Structure formats: C-alpha cells, structure tokens
Length: 76
Image (cartoon, rainbow, N blue to C red; front, side):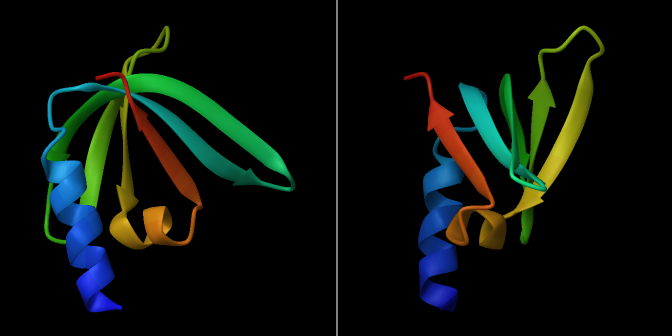
C-alpha cells in the first residue's frame, strides 16, 4: 500500500503550480467541485489554492486520492 501512495505523491508533485479541477466528496452524497492551483506537496498532504470569490487553501492527504475521496483533473 505504501508503494501506491508513493506513486500518487510523485504524480501529484509533477503537477505543482498547475491549474487543477478538484472533485471532493463532501459527505451525504454531496460532491464539491472547485478549480484551483496545486500549490505545494508535503510528506503526507498536498495543498490547493482555490479560485473562488474568497481565496482559500485546502489540504488533502494522498490516501484521499487513493480512496477516491478526492479526484484531481489537471488542465495540462
């Protein structure tokens, strides 16, 4: 399982600075879709700066991507 997370982390790291569409499971069958920029990657999380009316940064773990709680679609 750790090997899969390492692969996900490396893939996400290769897109730092790029525009991304974020689809996150908001619970209760609600899916939240936002556009933003992949800002930084850390050992166990990554951050995305959202392009909403109010600029804010959200963070997710690589396991969120693995379990499909979060899906990332890169513009490039």
